[in-house]
Length: 532
Image (tube, rainbow, N blue to C red):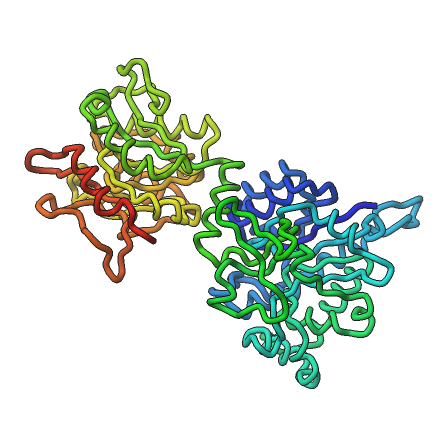
């Protein structure tokens, strides 16, 4: 017999799943990694999960969910309804026969499993093997474990509402019970199946759509048939840390237990008193900086991002490239791979320089950019940030950008019929920098470069991605990528109420000088230690 970790997902892509999938695959867990996925899950994500050895049972969501969104901030009731319903395909799968002699079933799938861990996915990661924790803690008397949130149900408004709606007549005694998170619980396999069945039955019986699965789970765990086996481990035992670094100060204090210890140096969540890594961490993404750093860790183990800095032979020797190395690249502390992109006439590249098979001149920039992006794909990189050696990047903020939410991200403008007199071409301005996803890059790498784009690599990319020939892309404009549209004005020295700057294009498109590497150092003096 073996253990299983089980989750159910819908309408998600690989970045949504990656932290969960890679951490589970690398934590030492040797059981079955089971993730139920419907047809809305991105095919790239499916391929990645298969590479990691996940079992991916398919399921068909009920018609009630057609056309609905599945994030709590988009359609809370649909999200909550799905959270209750999702136990149904798991029940059916666990109870299905897996062997037959003639027409007779030998056993059901549930009989394969010793223990089961039930998990949400997006905001769950594994630090150590959950099977080891269960082996050490499951006994004849204790076979079901909840993950505490740190206080009684009555003290937290969301949980109080969910529990009241689940069983109003039981509120008076339920309100004193400790909050248990429905996104992570575990136990002996048959008991877990019985829990799933009970929660699905409650879903059928309770008409109120705002009785979310967390209310159902807190009520189910206290039913007599489960309560006799149920235990909520203390934080020092290391089962699951449910929270984020600032939870106690910004959301709810830990009154029934000591809080987890969040170590910003090694990015590990430790138990209080015993100082051991928790097996599971849930809800960590409520803290944006912690979530960003964790994302970067797992991204680097998958398809890491790459910064491609447009340059040329002259800029190698006149201090322009060096000013970038001495300022914002240094402040990135190696957290992003990067290359200065040079043309084929250049010789003897430095370790951080990339010579591509395209001319080095300004007039052939589209060919250099296309070749550099193809090199990134061929060498295992994922997202790319394209900018010039005259682009200043605020390193502390750059690390926090959620670029994976989009296929094409930057400062969107139009070319004003400058290069194409027959139509208005929209594009993300290249001097301020823009992001390309692997999906967007697949269109760029195959696209022809028409004569009318001349030197405008950013205009060409915009025409390919925003001109209707590249369907299904998520594109976004962000004022924080500053394009310096007016050469008479200095770059901003502060943020504005609606704009948080990430980058600045320092070159001027008219006047003299158009650029001086001292401007990079001047920008760094103003913005280099800027907080988020």
